Length: 307
Image (cartoon, rainbow, N blue to C red; front, side, top):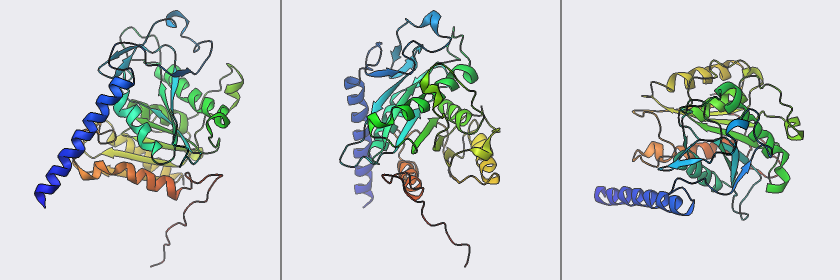
């Protein structure tokens, strides 16, 4: 049996590597060219990006740099099981780059299998060499605008405007917390800014420390948090935010995986079974919260406290 298990693990790894290769070839990220099919968040350009708006994005080994036109790339769920839920995915990369495949495309495809339509965000990078952007002012504004944009265009994509989540990895998780758990500054660029930027639910995957401790947890949406126990950077803020949400009475679920460090994404490079299955725990949480039910659902009955 152990030999069969080893073959199974090897086969799964081969499939993952093949999937990445196909994405690189078919998704246009094999060369240092802009990734196609991105929808600009601001038709006339993001506020404050005028000086570099015409520069092209740069892609190196599937990592995206030089973002000056924030955008969303849409991954539609199969109509056979699309349920109207939507998630904006915010890749990580330390605010120096975007981990486009492992923390953008692959999570998008994973959520598609749950019937969720996904929108992967390219946001401005404040820590890239030569950048004049700010995380709090510009990158967070891009994340907030993304939620507003999806809500404003919900009908076009068969999305319920009251079932829109925001999911972020590492640096992207910081932006999720800044939008979901902290005050969002008002924006007045156009009619889209009239929509609420607060997501209906939030998913934070090994989020960084910015935005934690949060300043508006009392009105925060339900949260799913996941990190590795060995992650010196991001396990502490994950625990801090979870405790804040719990103390504020916000529905929150935490998964902290043993012997696991940073950057496990959706287990593209791991053979640990717990990590292989963590997206299933997210699916369970989304189901229990009623987020995957068309036309609005009801939460699963809470567990009884009676023995």
